Image (cartoon, rainbow, N blue to C red; front, side):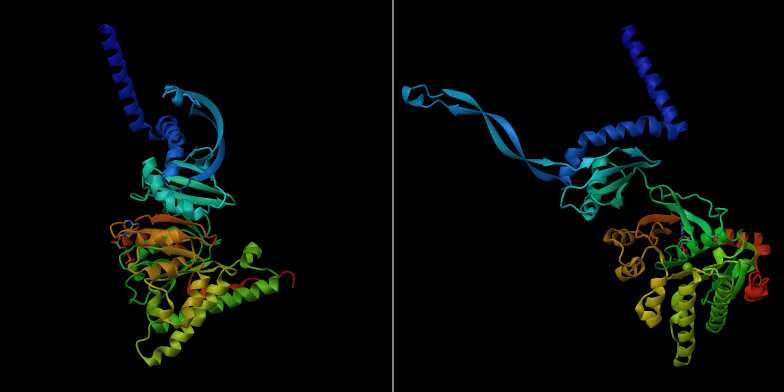
Amino acid sequence: MTEMLMVLGGLLVLAAGLGWWRHSRPVSFWYAIVFPARAALVYLTWRHVALGCGLGRKRRRWRWSLDAVPVAGAASRGAAALVEHKRRVQRVDVERAPRLGVLRPTGLGWRVRLRLHDGQVPADYERAAEGIAHAWRVHAVRVVDVAPGRVTLWATMHDPLTAVDVEPETGELLRVRPGKLENGSDWIMDFRTVPHWLNAGATQSGKSNLANAIIKGLAPQPIALVGFDLKGGVEFTPYAPRLSALATSRVESVDLLADLVGIVEDRMALCRTQGARNVWSLPERLRPVPVVALVDEVAELFLMADKTEKDQIAKTSTSLLRVAQLGRAFAVHLVICGQRIGSDLGPGVTALRSQLSGRVCHRVNDPETANMTLGDLDPAALDAARAIPAETPGVCVVAGQDGSWHRARSVYVSEHDAEQAARDHAHLTPTWAALLAAPLTGELPDAA
Ligand SMILES: Nc1ncnc2c1ncn2[C@@H]1O[C@H](COP(=O)(O)OP(=O)(O)O)[C@@H](O)[C@H]1O
Ligand SMILES: [Mg+2]
C-alpha cells in the first residue's frame, strides 16, 4: 500500500515538474521532450501516413510463402482434409513509402528531407501536404527546398502568424524586418538584393500597415524616403518630417517622377565617369544616398478622369518604368502598393510589374489579382494567397526573385508609431534640393 502511494506521489511530482518545465522553459522542453516524442511518432507512422496520402509506390518483390497443397489422391482414399505445406517463392506487389531523412527540429516544428520515388514530382507532395499535416497533428506542412530527386517538408506546430512581434529596424542599410514568416523566422526585406516591391491586396488587407512597417524600419537609416499619395496625401502626410518629397496630386507626381529619373540619370553619369557598374562600387565618399519611393495606391497614378490627363499618365508611366529599370544599380528603390496592378490600368503597367521582383500579396477579392501579383509562381502560392481570411489583416504571401515563397505577416505598426518614427528621425531627412544636386557636387573623379 505504502509503495503504491510512493509511486503515485512520484508520478505526481514528475507531472508537476514537467508542467513547470513546459511553462517556464518552453524552448528546452520542446527540444528535450516534445520534439523527440513527435519524431518517434513520425517515423513509426510514416509508412501508414505516406500510403494514406497517396505517396506510395508499388514495387515487385520476391517473397517466400508456405502454401497448403492437398495431397494428391488423399481425397479418393477418403481422407478429405489431408494437406501438405510447401514452400514457394512468389512475386508480390508491396507498396513502399518514400524514404524519410533525419528529422531536424526547428523553433516551431521540424523539417525533414524526403527522397522522391521515380516519377514523382514536388507537386505531388504539395497536394499531399494538407493530409500529412492532419496526420501529424500540426498546423501546416510546406514543401520547401526542392532539389533534384528530393524535397524538404517543413512542419510547423502552431501558426506563428497569430501574434507577430518584431522590430522593423535591422541596423543594416536598406534592410528592414517588416514581420515574420510562417516558418518562424524573421521576414527580411533587403532592397539591395530585391530592389523593388509590389505590395498588393484588397482594402483593409494590410497594405498600409506594411508600408508603415517599412517606413518605421527605414526611418533610422541614412536614406531618403519619398512618398506618392494621390488620395490627397491622407496616408503619407503624417510622415512628412521624414520624407524628402511628397506628391499628393497627379501634377506633383509627374514632376517628382521626372526628378527621380533625373537623379537616376545623374547617378548613372557619375558611375560612368568613375568606371563603376553601380553606386555600390563607387568610393564611399562619392556614394549617393539611397532613395526609397513609396507609392500608396498605384491605380491613382494611372486612372484617367478625362482626356486631358492622357499626357500626364503617359509621362508617369514612362518615368516609373525607367526608375524601375535603372533603379537597382543606382540605389533608387520602389515600393508600389495597390489593390490591382493589371493591364486594365494601361499598357505600361505590365512592363512595370515585371520589374518589381519582390511581391507581397495580401488578401485579395479576386483570383486574378493574386495571379497578377504572384505571377507564375507555383500554384500552391496562389492557393495560399486566396485562402487568407479577412480576420487576419497583414497576413500575406511573400515571394522574392528566387521563386521561393512564404506565408508571412507584417508586424502591427500603427500610424501613430510610424509617425513617431518619422518625427524622431526627421533630422536624417535629406532635402530634395540636396538630393537633386548630390552626384554633381561630389568631388569629381580623382582618376580623371
Ligand atoms: N499585421 C497586422 N496585424 C494586426 N492588424 C493589422 C495588421 N495589418 C493591418 N492591420 C489592421 O487591419 C486594418 C487594415 O489595414 P490597412 O493596412 O489599413 O489595410 P489597407 O491599406 O490594405 O486597406 C487596420 O485597421 C490595421 O490596423
Ligand atoms: Mg491603405
